[in-house]
Length: 85
Image (tube, one colour):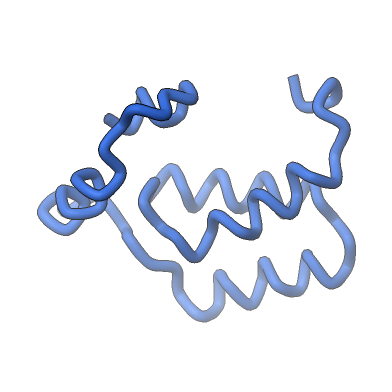
């Protein structure tokens, strides 16, 4: 399911994926306050590439982490798509 979502499959059952994350020990569904503070600081410094890098690193530990999605989206909106490919 995670691979499908990473590849842009909009038909993935994200609700089910969040429930399954609770049962998988390696899935981290929430960020620590320190991680969120670091991302907020990067956002304030207007560093979209580093915000994307850290968000992706944390999303790899817990793809269903809803706290991280806005940070990654913020970064993606500020970096030209051609430079990310």
